[in-house]
Amino acid sequence: MRVNQSSFRDKLNYVQLSRGDVFFLCLCLTKVKEAFPVEFSEECMHQNPEFVKLLNELSQHVCPTGVSKQVQTDLHQVSQHVCPSGVSKQVQSDLHQAEKELRYEKHPWLMNHILYTELEKLLLEAEIEVLEGAEPQHELEKLLLEAEIEVLEGAEPQHGKQFYSMLQDHFTTIKTGDYLNCCPDPGSKVRLLGLTPEVILEQNTHMQNLPYIEQKLIPLIEEQLSKKCDKLLDYYNSTHDDIGSDLTVGQGSQLPNVIEVYRQKIDDEREQLKKELRRQDAQFKAYYATLLDSMHLLEELVSKYRLRNQSQHDSVMAEWMMMKFDGFCLKIRVLELEIMIETYTFETTKALQKIRDHLDVALAEATKKRTQLQKLLETYQSVGMGFDDLVKEYGRLKEEVENKQWALSELKQSESSADGQT
Image (cartoon, rainbow, N blue to C red):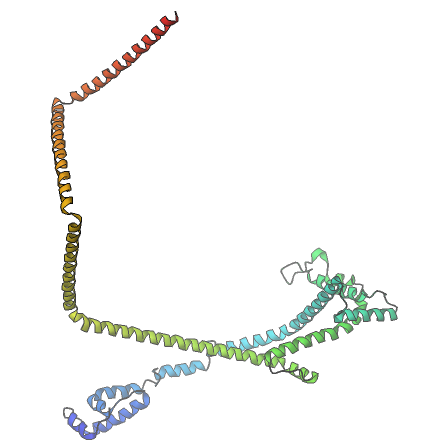
């Protein structure tokens, strides 16, 4: 807040500052504003002169970024020997040199691998077309026909498939030599069955025809690779049109640069995406911290202002609920009385009275009988424990008498039946 000079004089009567002190504080305030991104008014300067001096002393040892000047100097010295990734520049240089040597050594192998793959693909397509009995639509089949003519003219073997046969045999011989190294150690001289690549090549009867094979296959492989390069260039350059072979060859020679630019663009976008993710993460953390602060503030406001009258509010709500509960109880009682009036009429009351009289008589008789039985039980219990034995003995004797009576009746029946038979 900015105020005029007269207001300063009115407000600063309690601060005893000389003109020299005021001038010194103004200089300190200027240095503080230059060193730190803070808003410090003249009013605050006059109210807190010691704080201004403290900030001035601090500005001599701390950079605007919040790091001490000594640490800033050390970081600058370290940055001269360390890359931003944290690796020393010497190690980074050695790493770049190793990558360069790796690319240099890998380049011939990749070229040979491409030629090997293309040759294998041509042989496979030609074999599939021969097995299917199709017309010679592939360039290799046309070469077979041309080879037949040339072989006939040169008095060579007279079969049209001779070219394909010697090409397949030569390719198989080369592949067989790769399987001889059965030992995992590259420096080992152990070979499968004791064979060497030289021995395998000596068994190839078509070595003298190798120049002829190369002469016929090189243009075909170059054509296939040119088509693939055109397709790859069309993918990376969508504005490319088929406007001439010279231009296509010129653009094809620039294909590595196009791919490198495209790859660099992807790397830049990936780095930008990482920065954006870090920024969003920091922003999320800031939003989360702000949300937590807001929640704490809301809890404080609720506990300070709302909960102060919560007890009174709860008591009023409790009284209201009690009154409402009493009202419901009265309504239920009225409903109960209405149901009883509708259920128990004058005639129903007389019938219920008669039923009650009958039940009272039955209850009196049952009570009297219960009393008699209870007295009898008490009499039995007064006899003691021997009464139970007498009851058991009586039951046993009664059972024996019944058994003997049954046996006598059976004997009488058997005697009467015997007399009748005689």
